[in-house]
Amino acid sequence: MLDEAFLYAAVGHPVRLQALVLFEKTPSSARELGVLVGLSPSAALYHVRKLAEAGLVEPHEIRRRRAFEERVWRTTTTGWAKLERMLRSTVPPGQPV
Image (cartoon, rainbow, N blue to C red; front, top):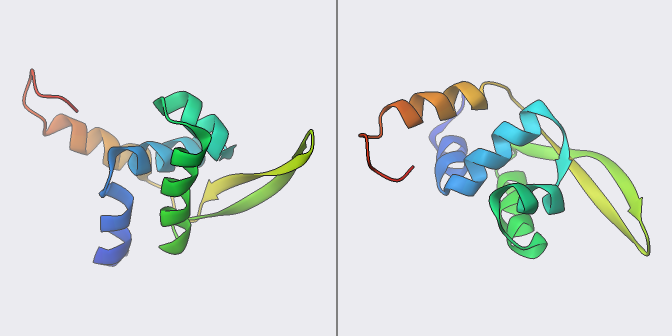
C-alpha cells in the first residue's frame, strides 16, 4: 500500500500522473514525456525528478544521444493507468481534465 506522500507526489500535477502511466506502459525518457504532454525536455525532467525523489520512478537504462546520455525511466509500482481512469471518471462533463 502506498503512503500518502507517494500518492500526493503522483497526482500533485497532471503531468506526473501522465508520466507514471507512460513509464508503466513503456519505459521512456523525459524528452519523450515532454513530446507527449507538450512540455520542454527540461520542464518534463522537473516532474520526473519529483517522481524519482518520491521513489515512484527509477532509471531503467541510459541511452547515448549524440553528445549526451539520456535516462530512460520506469515506474517502481503498477496500477497508474487504472488510477488515471478512476480520476478521469470523477470529472464532471465539460470540465477540463
